[in-house]
Image (cartoon, rainbow, N blue to C red):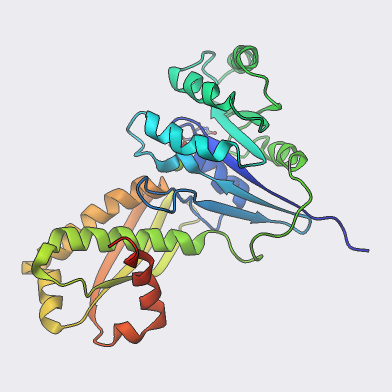
Length: 301
Ligand code: GDP
Ligand code: MG
């Protein structure tokens, strides 16, 4: 007889910097950095998938849409809200400050409209004493009927096993939605390639026809630090285009790289070492891989 399989969708909410990306990285494993969508794209629910022999969790980092330095604004909360009703559980991350911030109240207000169980995750317990953690638990549990409350440190992994156990409780019996080897790597690359392409198009304006495609040939997170090495290649159709994309003394390419890196850093929540190359590939329209990259945007042009 086969074992039962459990699967479900879990979204993470919380204000910028509370540690959503760090927690998701920790829960998923070392191999990926977190994906956050850009608000305007249709891919506004980016997923990170954790597959174990007996269960699969699809994490949705919806409010990660932010640029970290901005306040969690109404738009983002709204974007997140649409997923609240569709998921099996919501992880609401807060810090052990011993008080409730206006953004938290805002999120709770919206959560009250759905029946989805909400797990309060008090993160960064490594940076607070017991009393603060207790006070935070107390004050939040008066505001909302949380399904569970779990204090963790996403940074050092304290109690994250316990959190995983709690999450498992809320997974219904269900199918494996995604294959074992799918973790988000692909969509993440696509978003990164889209960013580079967008910057290139924006900076180049009409000088270059839309005949460029961007391939992310390598994207690796360093084991020892919060840094992702990325190699991107911009494909164009003519030698003369290559010259324009590179610019005088490499100035244009440098600018494309700098602008892209800013967005990618915000997107991944980590430092980014980005290298951009330019190649002429007359027949890129016949390349399946590049067409796929380019086709991803076709609908929106
Ligand atoms: P996000 O904006 O919610 O995705 O937050 P990030 O995951 O990007 O984390 C924001 C900052 O908080 C980073 O500098 C993290 O290193 C830090 N951080 C995340 N989790 C913890 C934690 O458990 N303890 C401490 N001390 N810092 C943390
Ligand atoms: Mg983040």
